[in-house]
Length: 153
Image (tube, rainbow, N blue to C red; front, top):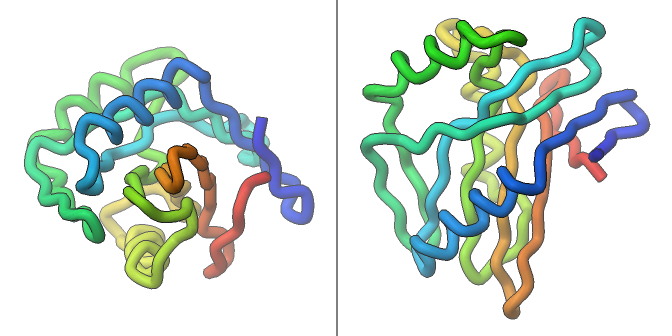
């Protein structure tokens, strides 16, 4: 369980999903890779549960950049939405090969853009960065909340 005490927010994610994301990152190393985070919020909107990921059908990854397209993911998203509880897009994840799990200026700009996009139904997108530095894996969970980026601890 991850928390942002000052905001009263909580996030949880299964170890199996984290392991899967780390393995995907290792397979694409030394290039960045990422995808969509799927999950749901509690009724009180303060507890995010991340349950799944969707990998993009089209993307470009280099050691210092990841760009993805959303083409072809709509049907997968609709499938998650039919589940109980309804699951939906809650944010993004990507790797930082040979770097820390800290959002870059590009990452922050992208999250702010997602939050401001009228086509996106979530106003507080989550961001997971998986850093691979010095043979160590670091997870950084973040949320865009009231135009600021906060880190879950």
